[in-house]
Amino acid sequence: MQAFLNAFDALPFGTFAGTAHGRRYVVVKSGFAEGASQKLVAEELGGTDYVSLNLYRTGSCALLRPCEMPEAKVIGFVLDLRINAAPYGGRSVRVP
Image 1 (cartoon, rainbow, N blue to C red):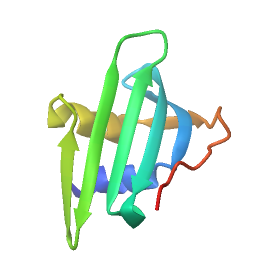
Image 2: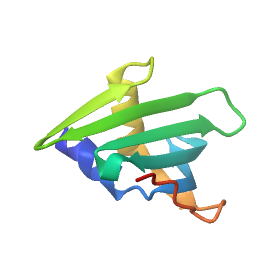
Image 3: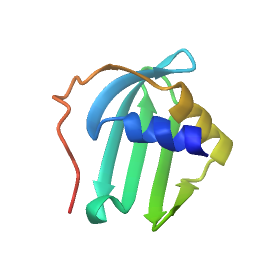
Image 4: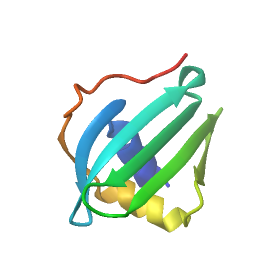
């Protein structure tokens, strides 16, 4: 889980393009409640793949909640994700 958290935390907030498992995605990472809750949504460009997760941080614990998909899918996606560009200006969508 620590490798996943490190990879997730290294991703920028906002919208960016990335590659995972040889496929291109548009990814949005957003934060809520002063970082206690974070969301990541990725849509494959030119394909049908979709990745969505919520991450809740409660004190010293992190709770991963994939959205209607296996936990292994979202973990594998985040671990393999490489940022290509911030095509939408990398705008922050962090909400207090």
